[in-house]
Image (cartoon, rainbow, N blue to C red; front, side, top):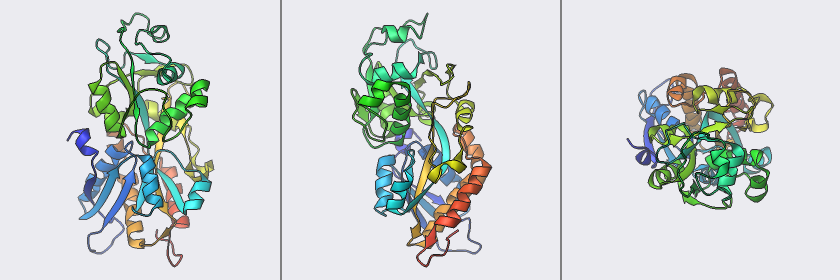
Length: 347
């Protein structure tokens, strides 16, 4: 199935792994991150095989997912931007990481092979500021000696919706380019200096495929599935890297989840010679007080299954599974924070 079709609202059967006796089928709902959609869909497909329970997940972007969980219209939200402890407390939410992955830059350039073009954070930021406007500009040519760059205009493509992928991308550019930080900054929704918008990772991918000379940013699985030409990026330690599982793992290795309030770790521009520069986690958001304890427990059962049985599937899609030690911390946080209306833990 093509990614454009996949990114519609899905209804995938899941199972209540916690149930020791037969129960009526129960659907749970989630909404948010398109970054995590490919692996969530795969996990749900796997989970389907042992029950008729359903997971109805709307891949609508992190910003919309945050709004929906705050409005209590879904059982969990999904965001690639961790919320602050203050925002979590104000909304009565807890968050926990579910998966990690990488964001890559993609281009539509004749004569340039996938992974051939080299870019740096500062130059990429200048492209998104509208300062570098031609593919054969001196700033790009200096990074790519011997590469025949086309003398065509650069069309910048960015997200049009509230996006955790945008948060990771703009967070990285803000760390590597002071002007970008001051003029645009980091966030799920920013005021872009130039460019055309696309809704979701699939919308950005579609625009880059359609427009000659375009550049965009997407989660790595979207680039691979759509056969888009990615670029190399220069990392924190000065090495040009190709994206992939090992480079994402190298960046994720620096995470100290235990010390981060609310598990709020951001993994952009991490040190390490093999660390990909734009890596992040997707966080599930749930209300601490669960009005429907059975549905809340079913959400946790889905993620418990995914943590323990979904690592191979995650690796196939070049995501980075949460380490076992972190899963234990997450599940301890479930027990401590997620309660029914009587104050009893649902896990």
